[in-house]
Length: 314
Image (spheres, rainbow, N blue to C red):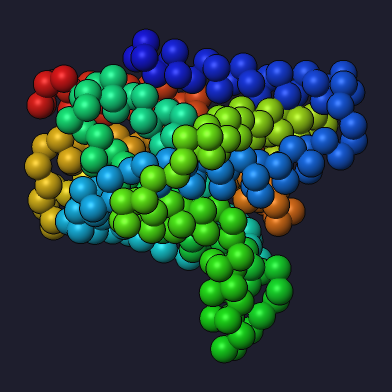
């Protein structure tokens, strides 16, 4: 649990710093949108291009593991979307982000350090596969849905706008370009890689800071029932669905199962806020879901890690 607390405290501290900066009006009125634009169009693409270009793509494309991860996403997100449509919202963009918040995990800031601490370098390939699936599957579908919501398309036009949303996403384009470079074993020159790494390192802190800025004047208690539902799904239902698939339908070795389940058990990732802010949809609920799920995950993720450490050893 101490490792999880050590990872979580800086996350909350950056959000608090953003909130205080907004509360005392240290930055301009449009600072949240400007900072979020920097994260979405510049910092995150730089980070994704750098990290995916250096990832051993040929080694991490384990189709059994990817099937388990994807199965966990769809087994959770599809019923959640139906429930969201019935009980919470009729708007496709809000339903899409509701579902995405229920399965998109904080794999970068929390998952990677926790898995490496628990299992060491042996878990690296499974961890990278999980991170890439998190980006391509969840972020890809969410981006397509948000583009359809933005244009208000219907009929065959829905497919056109969904594809346009994928092609126009700077995040997915950066990931795809990085994977192509990795597959071709082309190395980004040192100075260019350093440039990307410097920009990319600012993505997480800036996104969290922007989240804190947004919270000024907002009530995180609004929509508390919906946020509580998302938190339960993210921290309990999603990892349970992943475990059932990995344990009974597509059996994985214990270490791969551990990585898949622990990554699924992580709280909602900050990219959901970035996407919500970008399209001006579901921002308050997304922010609250990230905050609440991160707090509660200190107990639930600790349980998952301890279970697998006891089962297979560090």
